[in-house]
Each structure stands twice: as structure tokens, then as C-alpha cells.
Length: 350
Image 1 (spheres, helix red, strand yellow):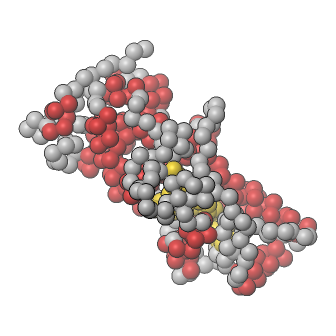
Image 2 (spheres, helix red, strand yellow):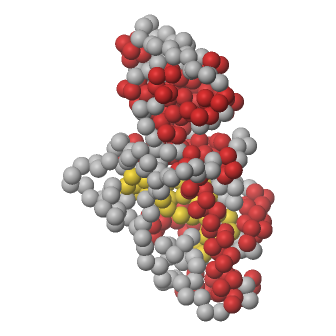
């Protein structure tokens, strides 16, 4: 079925005429199949976003008020899920590439404003205990409340002299720190770190580290891979397991940590602007950081609305994998953390 095309006056879109909102494009005119194939989300979810973000997108500014909130949201979703402004979606809703870019900026900032509403650790003890129980049920690893990892997202070079964003593969990127629960919901996201920083340095300088070092969630820990240093609140694999208990610990650790690997693959499969398949994000580090955060907010909102992110988003066909950094396993320099891991081995894996 052909998608209705509505051509709008570009000057009117850019500057408005008496600050009126244009509603010539109607979401109801688009089929459910086209919404999913072009924008990546079902109708009711898009209606929810219009309700959630509408107040921010209807602000009386010179440039954005002439485009309705639903059109702005569809433009942004089209970019997030395709990684390109050159899509059928621009023609379908009748806005130019320049207007689409402004829509993406508006929706991104609106989602950024709501990041803490949707991305956070549970606040009450019952929810924290539920997290521990769920993770323990997965592979027998006790006390876990989250899995941590980093992912590189390619960005354009800020300038010729700035090497802080050049990772070890010689590419410009942001190194993003994330923590997820067993469902794949993100509980911490930090997207502003330059690509030259190794994962262990990102974690060491992060607000997440500061919170746990200050005693947040005592008697609990995160799981991280060998790119991180062992901490009393961060359990990492044993580099050279020598006993059956150490083997069992590493197997349980690997099975539990795979939740994050699956989450990151799903995130990049849904939001193709992150996976590099259409090239690097063509924005400054700050704006690129905000786009990544906006995608993470949408990821969590979709989970809250009952969307099964893992079965609904299989990776179909070849996909450009996100940048992965090679690393040397980090040796523990924390005697107290070593002792905590040994106690865990004796109590649960011997």
C-alpha cells in the first residue's frame, strides 16, 4: 500500500506563520505495518511518546513549533532506527532533510530531559532483592544487582588536533558505560567518555564508581568482564582458573554477563544510528552523546510498555558490529576485593 505523501511549505516549516502548528500529516493515515517498518515502533507506543514529549516539542520557538509533535517524533524515530536522514520517511511526512535534523535535535533533548525518569537503579530494598533473586536464578551467581560493560559508538572527528576521541583502532568514538538488569533494562548509562579511554579508566572516573565507592547498595555487586579491575563491588572473571570451584565461578559469571552482551546487540540492532552501518554519527561529541542517551531512554520505555526487545528484534542479515576494543585482562590490585571474591568462591562454588 502506498504511503500518503504530504508536501509542506518549507518556509512555513522553518519560520512559522503566526506560530501555528501544522497537522496536515496524520499518523492515522499510516498503516501499522509501515509504522513498524519505517519507524521501528507500534502505533500505541508512538501515541505514548506524543503524550510524553508533546509539552517539550510544542514550545513556542521560532523554528520548531510549526511542525507538530507527532511529526517531530516520527522524524526522530526514523533516524534513530535507520541511522540515516535519506529514508522514505522524509518524503512520507513531507519535510526536508534540514527540518528532519532539527526534529531529531528537538526529540533528542526532550528524551534527555527525561533520562533519569526511565534510567535508574531501583530505590527500595524489595526491588533490589528481587534483582538479586533474578540474577541468582539465571546462573547461581549471588548478590548481583547489575551487569556492566562499555560500548564504542563511532562519531565524526571533532577536529584534526583533538586525539582524545581516537580509540586504539584509530577511529573516533565515544566509549559508553552501561549497566543493565536481567531483562536488559538499563540502570546506568554514561555516554560522554572519549574513545581514547579504556574501559577500566571510564569506570574509574564514572559517577557509577563514585556511588558504589560511597557505599551505594552495600552487600551487592556488579559483574564486569576482564577489561575492568576487580573491586569489592565489582566481580570480574578469574584470569587463570585452577580449580573446579574457580571453573564453576567463571562459568556462572560468563552466563550472567551474557545478558549485557545480548542487550548491547539488541540496542544496536534496533537503533541503527549506533551500529556504524550507515557511518559514524555526524555530530559533535556532545550531540552524539545525547543521541546515544535518547536511544537508551527509548529502549527502557519500550520495556516498560511490554515490548519483548529480544524476540522482537532479531538481527536479520549482516550487521555492522559496534566498535569493540581489544584489551588486556586487568589484574586485581585490591586485596580486599580479592578476599571478597575468594569468600564468594568458598561459599557458593566449592
